[in-house]
Amino acid sequence: MNEQICQVRPATPSDSHAVWNVRFNLDVAATALTNELVPFDKHDEWFQKKYFGEVKNYCWVLVCDQEVCGYCRCDVDASLAYVVSIALNPNWHGQGLGKKLLLEVLVQLPSGLKLKAEVKNNNVVSVNLFKAHGFIQIETTPDTFVLTRQL
Ligand SMILES: CC(C)(COP(=O)(O)OP(=O)(O)OC[C@H]1O[C@@H](n2cnc3c(N)ncnc32)[C@H](O)[C@@H]1OP(=O)(O)O)[C@@H](O)C(=O)NCCC(=O)NCCS
Image (cartoon, rainbow, N blue to C red):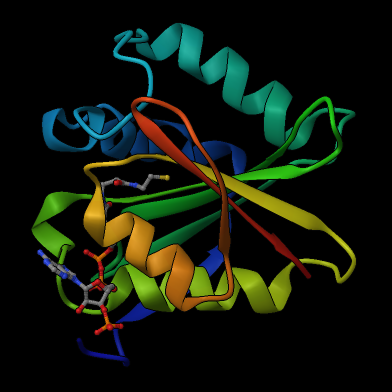
């Protein structure tokens, strides 16, 4: 990884398309819990409301070589836990960047938050990434692991 050219920053409204591109990349979409393909217009409406509306949710992006190549979202759920969802464009996988993004997000989130991640149980890289950063597996469903961490 080249530390000089990769940065984590809060998402802006204009990152919507780049985030959509990463989320609906075929390889990334295959790891998601739902396989609905959301058209960009619908995604954009959701993204603007979710991260720039009234409810406090968080989204950061990872920028490498001036390209938004990943995101980490933390969306509050009904139990007031923040659900963490992280993804990188596959071109950037396996270079320590997912770890860098998650670490920076954990530092920047306000303390006191309860974090939650739900990951397909065959997604070994992701499960291990969360476990390596203090998440504890609390629940299993037939297809997923649920992990939590208190900040
Ligand atoms: C999960 C994801 C963000 C990880 O990002 P990444 O940049 O590929 O991962 P990193 O290079 O930072 O590696 C993180 C850890 O996984 C390990 N790892 C990475 N790729 C691996 C692979 N193919 N096989 C085994 N271990 C692997 C690394 O060695 C590292 O562990 P370490 O800290 O003990 O060395 C990325 O793979 C991704 O976007 N996946 C698709 C979306 C997804 O699954 N999201 C999770 C659901 S919320």
